[in-house]
Length: 354
Image (cartoon, rainbow, N blue to C red; front, side):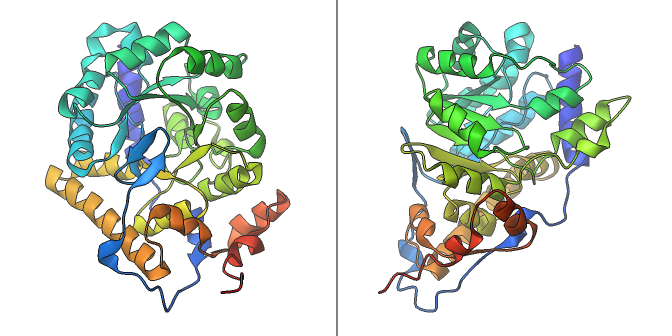
């Protein structure tokens, strides 16, 4: 019961602490292309996230599960995923591994979307056996392993021991039988962390940066002695993508989650090297406050916005955005320079002779 109560508090406070103000994506802008030589009707949204071929770069990222009331949220998210061809991840399944009574809150996703791409989800404290059970529970196509150190430290009942995480990730990746995705939950990833994860054989990394749902704020709402000074902890999603780009790791693909509000933000993430963009908070607000039809229309709008940006920039498919010049300004540029990243390099991508 305590775990189910926690899950519902996470939903409640995620909605209550949502920040409608700007975020780091506003530090990025595109250089216009007056001669894109492309047709909107010929743009394609398919993207490669090997071994997956996604029909859209938008991915419904992990949100909830583990409580009876979360079942309806996941059911609606699964319908959106099915109707719009989006990959989807469930929330952490540790609750269901410990209490079979809440398995339905996750299983509903596969029942509503029997042929879609669905990812299981566990924390890095999980064992190989737990990972295998989580995958089997929803017949998952892949497994997300989430990293949430600061959230755990601020959580009243959270973990305090993070030893052995990398070794467990490696063991799960070798044994589980489906692709493994390692993801941060909103605090971003440094170059060093990305390289460590890649060293464990993981080829899909979700940099999960600051800018979306703030789990430090969420846990502070739940804690009798909150630590608000940690609510700005971490790297933003654009900063994390710049950290990843500095790694230059062959065969590693990136997902950008954190603060994606619309199709233009998605285009910026793709231009910084992401192969897909994760959306969680925006969809949670939609499925809890709007009709299913409004949720489906919102995804259509995101796709339209992305295709408008792609057409205006002369990018026929998402991967083409990686050659488009991006202007990085403000705090993002300042912090990037401190880390040895060069914003000017991204601004001058089009300087090669025609």
